[in-house]
Image (cartoon, rainbow, N blue to C red; front, top):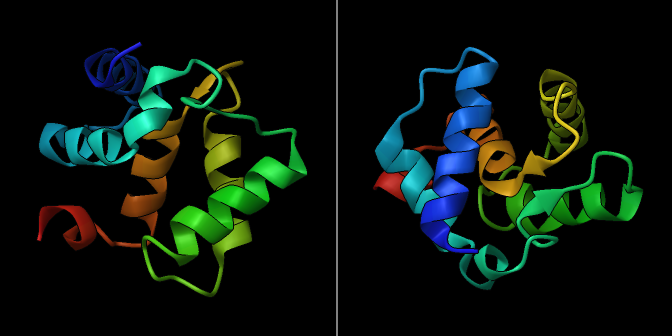
Length: 109
């Protein structure tokens, strides 16, 4: 799997839930995932795995976005928003979290 394939899958998921995707932002988010783009398992977020959701909060919401309050609630909202997908693309999840916290500047400068 490649970053380009993950961008395409993430874009499709976001569009299916009615999101007007900022392609430049999504591309930067997905490319920043690095090695996670090469593994199918790593490119997905499991909404039913508490340890996975804790990693998303710690490693992405807190460390990358710099948000310390409301991470769990925001992740729960994003998981609910994407409930129609059995395989939630990490790029799409991170995009929604970035937008939810208004932290686009982390990627776009």
